[in-house]
Image (cartoon, rainbow, N blue to C red; front, top):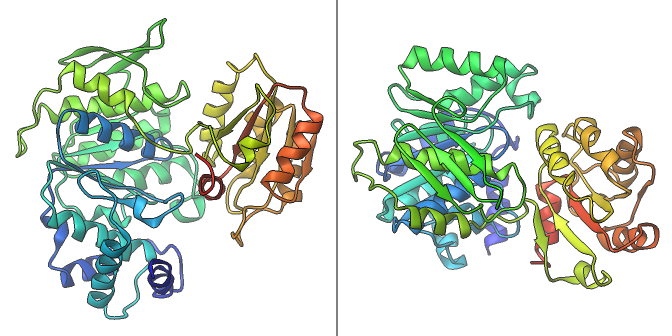
Length: 434
């Protein structure tokens, strides 16, 4: 039943992506404008790290005893993952009733899948009391369906880099301008450390709107202790905390953004007035972050069962050059075992930009097509991209299992195998692994 209605909703507009606020605003008006009845909203945009920052902020807030709504996309296995009401995913009957109600209110008018499902999330959030609502943009910011919230409590911009150029423009300045579109007059904005051109755009936009900027590297800082823990220092606090429960050195920066958001929230006079977050709650929150397919080690499932003792299987859904650079930097610490890859990517992505920093790190790579995705690169093209960037043993494989079997024959073990290149690929893997 859920699959049937989701399929119907995809047919309401001829395009998957058509950036505009007109259609979603019309639909929300028909639903009574639930976006105006939300608890204080933190709106998050950026190119990379959005989901991890949202997951970390959610974990920190819940550890402090707050009730939190969260909207993210895309989902990995079940659509319900996108809509978390007071920390709980809707059941299939609840989700079906919600989507049917929004579908009826739309009356068959043109609306994209993301727009109508965003409206459904906002309606669910408006009906359930909570202390905080965290919204992650889907694409861009200025014309993203989540940007219907007129007055968030706080906005957050994660690192901005080249991605989705066909929708956001071919220059980093145009992409930054689209992301900066979530800024609202007088509403503070926490921003990650950015490139010079991006900073110039963000500062110009903040100046136009009177937005107080809270900048990483100027207003807040994070450093890693020798034991792996974090020292966060802001304008009004200094916290000594455990390492976040997400692998990858880059996660300390995502944690810093979430901690900066917590610091800002606790200083805002927004009903309900947010408490000072105790250090113990912050530490518990960092240790309890749950965000699959972000450099996640898989512990069970059919591919894991293929591995000899001492081998490891990892999964990462990053899919653009900026994410690949962060991943390559982290894997430099993996010198104790050879590293191999199972790689699949959508043809709409910058495959060469992704492969350039990563391919030389792999002892061997097997390219696969992403199951069920018409826009996937072929296995041959995926392998070819790795070959162009100096992976010396890159070949196509029939599927993930075939890829692992091949790698077991050519990589000296014990070794690590990294499945990478796409959140859609990650979702197919997670559907049968954990």
